[in-house]
Image 1 (cartoon, rainbow, N blue to C red):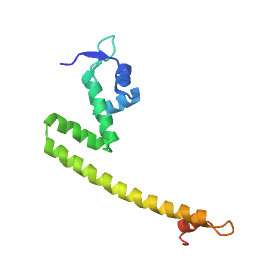
Image 2: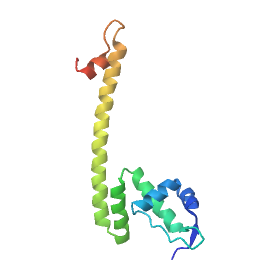
Image 3: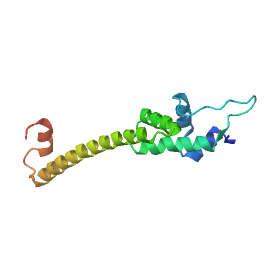
Image 4: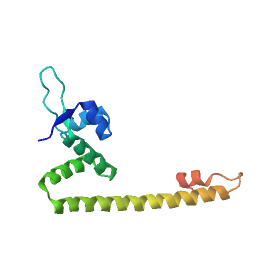
Length: 134
């Protein structure tokens, strides 16, 4: 059993989030809210810090909060296969986004190059491309 030693502010600071983030995770069921002792304040433990850090790291990898919730369930069940499937799905999604962003980058590079090559007397190639008057 973890020792509960942190206030909600201490928990937020230790996990690198703000207090409202902690409260939000509690509202959506991603973090348990400890009982409030009579005339006291709720206390949180190291396990709570680890849980919030897990959530934030998963978000940095692009997982949505719904997917993070699923990962939290899977972490308790030690289901590596299902976790791998979820990660592979996320990897596919990220790869598709990278392809799309690369296409956007290539198009913008071409537009900027055309704009730099144009003289001041012509219309703007970037505006023309956005209007559809290539």
